Image (cartoon, rainbow, N blue to C red; front, side, top):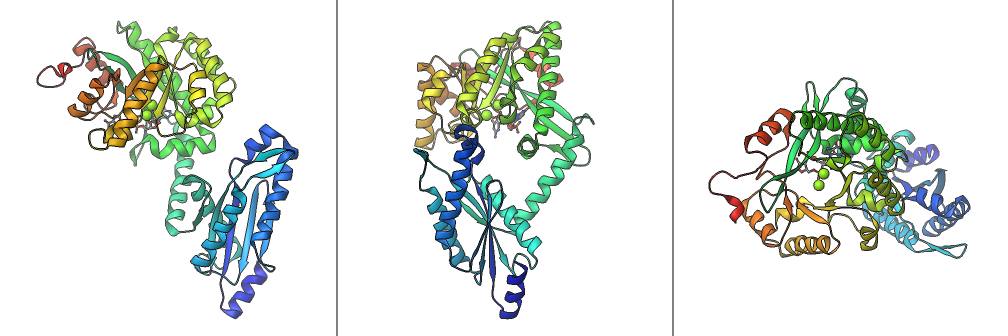
Length: 422
Ligand code: C2E
Ligand code: MG
Ligand code: MG
């Protein structure tokens, strides 16, 4: 590449550098064995070479990471065309040992001289762009941009601060009620983490959970959440608020911990809690990522006696067969469908179909993100069991939610006339 750069300086031409990573290569290795993974890498490099010219460079950096260098071209249209060609070539099935194997690449592209004039910088920026291609859903290519760099830097700085956040006691839990749509009683509270970073204010979970998830810090944080939520629930139960049930979110990584159920069981015992008063929420996407393994973990959790809910339902791709095999009790319809339930016929159809599906599988349903009475009326009309959202309460600190629980003996009323007659 150094030689190519020297040539490019002389001839005033461009260079493009592609970082290519195979999506979910690890699961192919894990499920079909390393010899199949090795064969796949060989076949991938063969197909890469077929897509390129004689003087282009293809290299394997290690693992499932390849680099392609195209001397002489740095115009976006030509390079996009080649990236598309590579993607299509790798999307076609690979026949290995009688198996038809499907894979896809995530590709990041940096251009000389626009994105860098040294090998280091071009490689680093192509890598950053590749990361962004993965974040945006895989099987695609992305050109490097300065914004990507900014968001990468923000991510790294969050990661750095996150390392200390647990020991510095910077996390807290807020609680949002889940309300029975029939009688207005609080059915459960959902624990939602907040990060109070001195000087930076409250950082919402969407900003740091994904970062924590990538760096395995999530295990430490997730453990803190379970500990703290159980401690709080035990305190409430002892003080007479013994009907409260609590719902706790689990991340993908936590779900992959073989001892998750054991650890949760220990925490429950240490706090002298009835496990039936706890529910764990896993997102649809996390549940389906490795459905067979999920099934075992969920059964182990059920063995401990806790309830299980599928969160953000409708945003992932559920195999209905697995939904039937998972020991879940509840579906939570994602807020994006509730938001436009009155104006968007598709969203309304997805929400009502999810309610029917849940009921026919014997599950109960929570609609997330209910913000107005009209949405509530629609959901009630379609027999949605429970509702959650700003219409009733935002996530609140423990003391405030406790006041709310004591106020009406756990019964919810909207200001004005009795709204549950809607
Ligand atoms: P989620 O579990 O689906 O939680 C619901 C999110 O919707 C919460 O955002 C809540 O504040 C917000 N929300 C509730 N009602 C409304 C409404 O009426 N309108 C609107 N616009 N939003 C509403 P939050 O607290 O920012 O949490 C975001 C996500 O972060 C959660 O989505 C969950 O996936 C994740 N998360 C939060 N706490 C934890 C945790 O302790 N562990 C893990 N692994 N993930 C967590
Ligand atoms: Mg949740
Ligand atoms: Mg949700």
